[in-house]
Each structure stands twice: as structure tokens, then as C-alpha cells.
Image 1 (tube, rainbow, N blue to C red):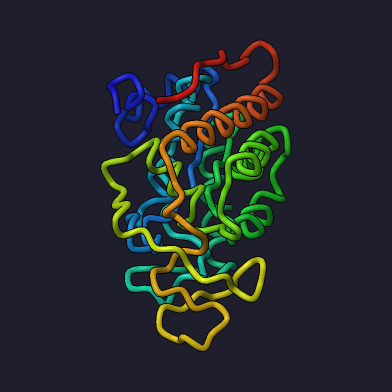
Image 2 (cartoon, rainbow, N blue to C red):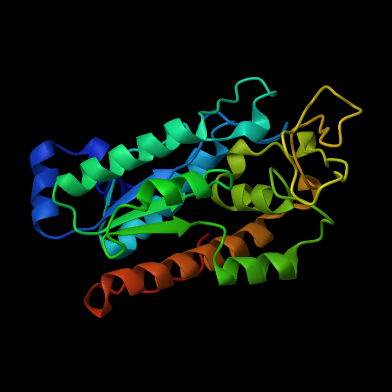
Length: 258
């Protein structure tokens, strides 16, 4: 990351600089992205964290926000059979997010964006934020926006997928290609359920068997597809933060990320 982008991350600042920027009315971003969650043979376990921090950094540049340290542990029960993957109970994760958000708001932040890269984390985060004023806290569901959904539908060639698949691998090829090993990408069998439950790398008789841990076909991924998806997500985020911050703090549009 450039020095300009790094300057938005509170972990790289002194407390008095953070205090000055809070006093100036800057909003905050709390990224949520796993650092210990399997992503097939071809992507690292911190794939979600990398995506969360990439989008947080670009969003922070647009709206001059402060980025709090990423929540890297969460509720990810579908992946615990794969080595290195960690999952908290939904109740523990909810309590953690609630207390972190409360602490950020107690510091004087007027608007907090919780940027969530997960699927199984969506419901616990909603419950964690339910007690806060909606005008102060917004839950940004990274892969739920209309532009992302439309773009994904247009470019996707796989017949099924939702994890370490064509789309997620394409995103990683666009934002961190050096961390992707396309030669190890392996398509998963079509599972019996449209949305898989707990995946397994060992039980071949299970309807949720996936040797690699992927669900979908990452061999179809390209950096061009990833660039289109990144642009769609950034546009979705731009629209959401514009609505939250109002016209005076409207983020300025940027070109397609490279």
C-alpha cells in the first residue's frame, strides 16, 4: 500500500493523530475478513482479510475515513474440517463485533461502516449492530450489491459456486495476482444443495465433499473478470456511503481499478 493509503489505518497512526481526525468528523470503517479460513488449494487462508482491507483502503481514500484493525476471526462453520480454518460461535462473534463497534463510536466517531466480506457472518453482524442508531452504523455487505450481482451474472461461466470459485478467484487475480496459484485451482463437484453446508475434504460419500475446499470452478477465473467485479463492488460501496454521509461528503468517482 502507498503511504497515502496507509495513513488511513489507525494501527499505523499515533493516538493524537487519530483524535484530531475524529474531531474533524471523519467516518470510520471496520473491515471483517477471515485470516484463517481455507480457500482451496490455490488461494491463501487470509483471502477474505486481503479483500476486506483492499476495499477498506480504497473506500477510505474516497471518503477520508479512518480504518480500524480488521476483525479476522468470525463465524465460519462450513470450513472447520480444513487445516488452519478457525470459527467462533455465532454468539461469541456477535458479542465481539458489538463491543468493537461500541468502542469505536464511544471514541467520538459519528458514522461507522462495517465492511463485511462473509456470508455466514451476515446474520451475526446484523444482530450485533441492531442496537445502534441506523444513521450512525451501516452494514456494508460486500457481495450483496446490485452492480456486483448483475456483473457476476453476466460474466460467470461456472454452473455452481460461492467459495474460492470462479468469481472469488477472479477478484484475487485482479487485486493480488502474486498470491494466486492457478495451476492448483480445482473445480468442486456439484453439491446436492444450492448453498452448501459444512464442506468436507475427506468424506467422499458426503453431499458436501470437496477435496480442495473450493465450491465452484476457479479454473474459469481471469483477471479481466476480477477487474469488472472490483469496479462493480466499488460502485456499490460508493452508492451506499453517499447515502449515509449525504451530499456534502459524497465520494468522488474513480476509474476502474487496475
